[in-house]
Structure formats: structure tokens, C-alpha cells
Image (tube, rainbow, N blue to C red; front, top):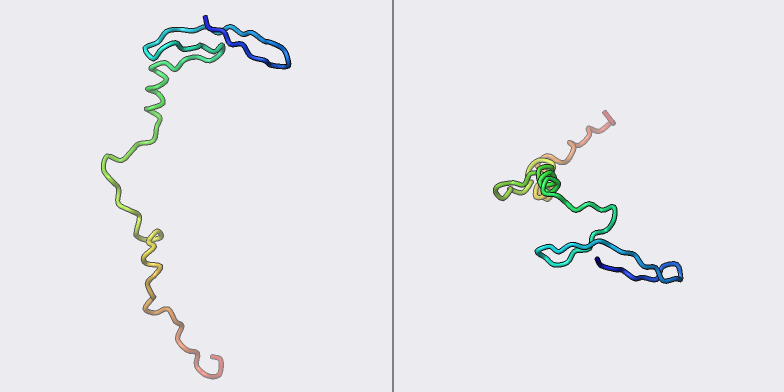
Length: 86
């Protein structure tokens, strides 16, 4: 068992946590926190967004075409009004 001695609230407080030996070394178990199981990890991967299998082309057409905004329209001016306000 591992012991954590800390000073909380101005006094000395001793808390005992359970510990286990894993391939990565000694791991402290915190009460109320469950370790991740293989099923939890697989569910997380299954619910993750899909990733493309090949590189995607940029969105450079239609509304997202930034180069089209730099072009001058061929007919961007209104025709002149006839005299007399017609």
C-alpha cells in the first residue's frame, strides 16, 4: 500500500491508497475512479469520427473559393440610366 501524506486544512492528514504493480511500474489506485477496460477503449475508438483514407483536396470551389473573390466580374457595373430618371 502506498501512503500519501499531505497538509490539508492546516493539519496533517494521512490517506491510504491501494496500489498495484503493472508493466509500467507501481500504480496508485484512487478510490471511486475505475481503470479503463479494453471494452471502454474499443468503444471510444468505435465512436471516434472517421478519418479519410487518402489526402483530401482543398475546398476551393463555390462558396469557399477564395481565388474567385479576387477576380473582377465581367458585368459588374449597372448600365447607365437614361436621362430623365426613367
